[in-house]
Length: 193
Image (cartoon, rainbow, N blue to C red; front, side, top):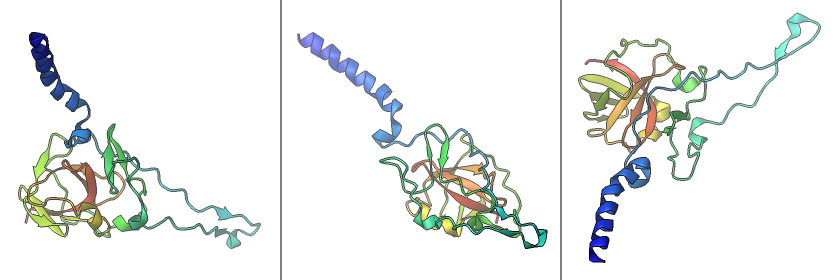
């Protein structure tokens, strides 16, 4: 009987790491970074035009404005963060406002050049200090979009790993995914300064 208990204990101890790998976020470990960035968002439809017989009198029908980003709830399931995040299966929760989102409008996109250091999960970058207004890694400097400051308040600016993705909707912006938290924010490349 003792030998059977010993064998069962050893088998259980050996199998626990395999079970934990199936559910990484349930065991305090983040899921791996997304394999790709988000797909372009479908642009919101233009306001319909109220038709009249006289073409000069056609006017757009007024629609209610979407709620402010600060009022959105990104926690789509119990246990998910109330910040833009990526679900398993590469679903980018919160990246759905389209190209015309005023929070990410830039008059001169890529004013400081384009980032060429590498995108996606094969390029993990270790934050080297700073904060949302200005942070760096590997000699490159960045800033978080002001509309996203509240979504990175849990970031460790001198120790977290991030992955950079191109933003298909907002010219001049990239997406920085925090590997530890599973959340992301819009960031602007400031160049090697």
